[in-house]
Length: 114
Length: 115
Image (tube, rainbow over all chains, first blue to last red; front, top):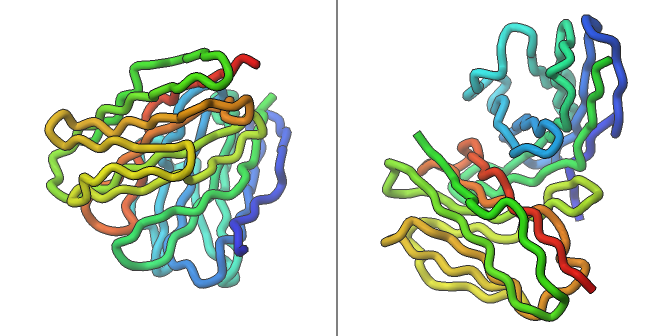
């Protein structure tokens, strides 16, 4: 069964460093998402992406964040200068087109900022 | 604005008991989707069910059942004859009327099944 994959599973970085989280969505999906879950808290929407552009972004998704689909298969989230409060689990999700809206989630990348 | 409330932060039940997880939502949309996801200790999000706002039929899948009541804006989830493997955090979520909109999650209910 096709699935969303994410790498790395765990990333440790120093405050102020740039990180890139990678996702490979399901191959025929057209909608892509990033969500964040701070430890012990709820899952929060960051950004959605369709047709090579951002569809919607949340207040969390400030200028430090960017997304890209560089090669038609990967979907990346970049954090330019990480802060301690960026420590969280980051989930990528993808969905097909249409009104069904079943988002398939990847296993997540745990980001730890020291 | 959309909001999902899961008032039960933590629930513990003894194995084989039935347990109901509550979910109350707020939305201005007349068409929307409701979801339940399971997050086991390993951390991934496992899709359980999607329901659209026009379909108020209750659904049963094995030991799981869902009760959608538009009149009270609730979408409750019942596990019958609970098992230790049901121990997880369960999230209720809501998305807006159009397809492929973002999901708004509740704060989750941590369910512990005691053997």
